[in-house]
Amino acid sequence: MGADREGRGRRRPARVMAYAAGGALVLAGCASMPDSGDLRGVESTPRQETQVQVFAVPPGEDASPSEIVQGFLEALTSDDPQYKTARQYLTGDAAKTWRPEASATVLTDGPGAKPEPGGGGEDTGEISYMLTGTKVATVDSQQAYAPATGAYGRSVHLTQDDKRQWRIDALPQGVVIGESDFQRNYMSVSKYYFASNTDAAGSKSRPTAVADPVYVRRRVEPMTQMVSSLLSGPTRWLGPVVRSSFPTGTALAKGVGALTPDDRSKLTVPLNDKAEGIGTNRCEEMAAQMLFTLRNLSPAVEEVELRAAGAELCSLTQEGADSAASRSSARHPDYLYFVDGKHRLVRIAAGSSGNEPDPAPGALGEGDTALRSVAVSRDEHTAAGVSLDGRSLYVGSLVSGGSLGEPVLRSQGRSEKDRLTPPSWDADDGLWVADRDPDRPRLLLFEEGKGDPVEVRVPHLDGRVQSVRVAADGVRIALVVEKGGKKTLLVGLIERDEKPGEKPVVRVVELRSATPELEEVTTMSWAGDSRLVVVGREHGGVQQMRYVQVDGSTPDVPAPAALTGVKEVTAAEDDQLPLVAYSVDGIVRLPSGEQWQKVTEGTAPVYPG
Image 1 (cartoon, helix red, strand yellow):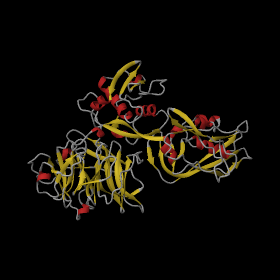
Image 2 (cartoon, helix red, strand yellow):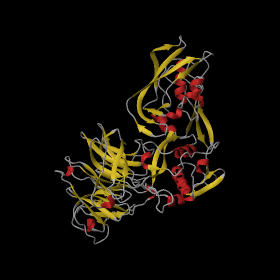
Image 3 (cartoon, helix red, strand yellow):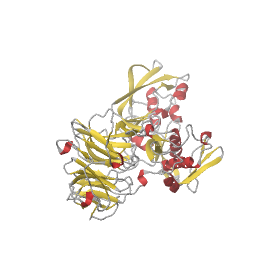
Image 4 (cartoon, helix red, strand yellow):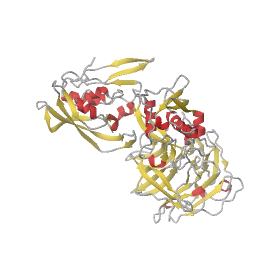
């Protein structure tokens, strides 16, 4: 087949593609190696070809150096599990030492390549090519994604073997791939660990699960990849604040092949001897970690059986996993809350189609204090509100007839924009708020929503906090930080150092950007275990609403429908509940699969949290 590409005057070493059709793989096309022309960039496969499976083409006889480099780059985009075909483009020694799993560098387009000046030539028996492009992201050896910018430039060196065939003998570790091929080849899946500040197995309280997103190859045994990744431990970023119930050194038993559930959706996982002798409670936590991790993969896994040394350790169903551990996206709030036209706290049943709110019970809904922003604890027993002038923070119970009392905090900021941010509750009834007073900017935590606040340390914070949202797991926090007129979204980790009889030391560390391309973030909210919804704009662009992952990647889900003049947005961790926003049209909501609908007049919508 191998038809010439129109206008190119040469044949591209196109990958062999197969389409899944009725359970069979049907060859869609193939091509030969190029036989003339200059080396050019590897064109990425269009993203929409989701059912395409790509097979690499081995090097042709007497292929030129440019054809070897081109064919190797093409082979990196294939679905070859061990990159066996790609290794055929390397010398024997290079094939043994090259580690494609070490990293993936993602470029806006496929990598370009050109001979390096002074890098030899075909008549010398050796030649070097420079791979070039513009970086979008990297994926490290732990499969963790990180946005990246700047130019990419790495060298590959070729030599001739004993048969006078050109092969690559020196190359960078890892793979380099175009953005659309990355999106086709890889998918983001969250593995789960437990917050290290929750009790280990054996206690009466349930541990809190924390999502740790990683990227795995989409069509290369993703279930086996995810189990292996889970057993290897959390990513370096999340590691300091989580724990795993799997004993150190636990791995799949030697010789285990691809993991596949049986016809009853039960997955049996043989582990090595490190897992022998564990107790039932701990084993069920291990199984819960695995079930949470595999929840969204196909085929579905409804039950996990863990085994070691040929014996069953324990077995757990999806329902049992939800009993063994707490997962934020499994929580379903009772109400959506917001501030009405009289500046009082009101609420509507979460997920309902109603448009008439009721006053929230308690002083914030029934009293005389005018509010500009609110937050409701996750158990919906307590609410916090910032006064209309932004100066005072009040806390009151959601019990009818309750009194409000004096504010728990007052800001000394001279203007409203220099006073208190909207508050946020964590999983342990801790209340977070930032004081934007330029003379004394602070991030504060009220343990159990009362008492003297703890001033949270934020080492290396470059800017002033404008917005705070704590994740339901209590160990991750999202901050909008302003510096030089730009507002960016940062995600960090919450570390606690607590000693009996002493005030806790709380820090927010490892801040990283979740939206490096946005320079004006208006509002944001957690929208799942590892996802946020963000409203902002790029340089020179218009306001947009999008979902982002905590690692800065874009989830493979549709962006919310466009909405004009968004000032605030809120989402529940339960993705079955609609997005809700405050815009120029008042309070509006976005039910799944529908367009935005006006609810009523009001401001400051929030789900509990």
